[in-house]
Image 1 (tube, one colour):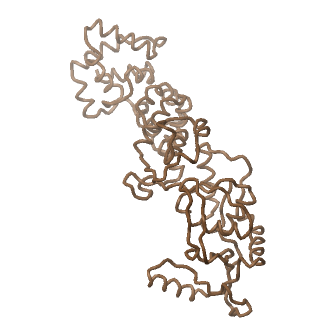
Image 2 (image 1 turned 180 degrees about the vertical axis):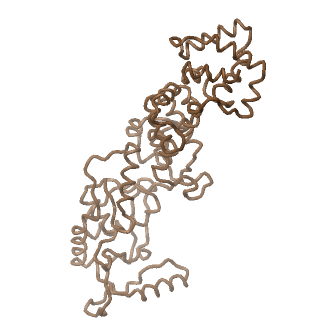
Image 3 (image 1 turned 90 degrees about the vertical axis):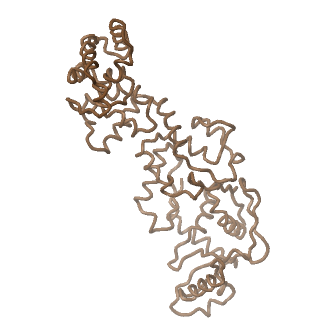
Length: 428
């Protein structure tokens, strides 16, 4: 685990903590103590001095005005901005006074640089298209491009897998490796993720931090499954465990085209993992979601017990933990319940009369389970010679105040005998 924090303005404690928190939530662990790139600054500067001594780097004294002029000229000529090598072969003894200098890499100007990529194949770059990048800033701090090469070498990094927007960086880094006589790692540049509309992924598509998906009610195992499947495949398999992903993953099966982030697929996958999840764990996670919202009695032990009892029925209908919470709304309602329009229509006079008789036929506390309730209601329906459809919607309306809920036996069981019968009697 390496924190690349050479950009001091962006590498705040808050930003770094968010990375750790996101990885921990996803269940992606690291084996050793994290390495902070900025802390290796002395080593990076040592390598720059080595490059200077070997003639593979030089001091550049261009003023900000000169660099601005280069940039404007490039813009006027319709080409990318590249440093023109003004100080590449000049004697530092001729340096102007009062100009803070940088150290630049002396990149080869002729020939080509080859990047052997495990996803894209061999990619070549004309060296005259790669300018002399900065290794040390004017304040003496190393740049990311230099630091990442040194750290990868020193840490024994074998594979660098990253987005294909870094492909040009691989060419630049390959030149530094060559200048130092080091063997570069294996590069694999993965196509970027696009939104459902084919455009580059943005926040409106789902380019969010891991904590945002946690707060939207996704399970970490679902996110791991979905993310590893973006741009990579193992036959027709869509659902697999993390252990299977570790066993099956390989660079050869990464596609060359951008993957598309699809919230509908993510939700369906999350629903699958919710149905498989342990009910106690789901209860704790749903309570955590509820604590971020208003009006949920999350500290009330009776409510907690009711939520746990309702979980088997709730999780069959939910795609996210937020939907689990929404589905449990009937548990926090106070008597007498305020009925929705559809609920009022379901509770016609004849339905209220039937519910009154049903309340008398419901079982005692000892049999107040989904199985016991199903048996008691089946006997009631047989005695009344009516179908469940005649009772289910009016009963749902009386118990929840609405027309949609988990299965009616689950609702009864989760409310408990006293609360359920009192809600029924409120409506009859």
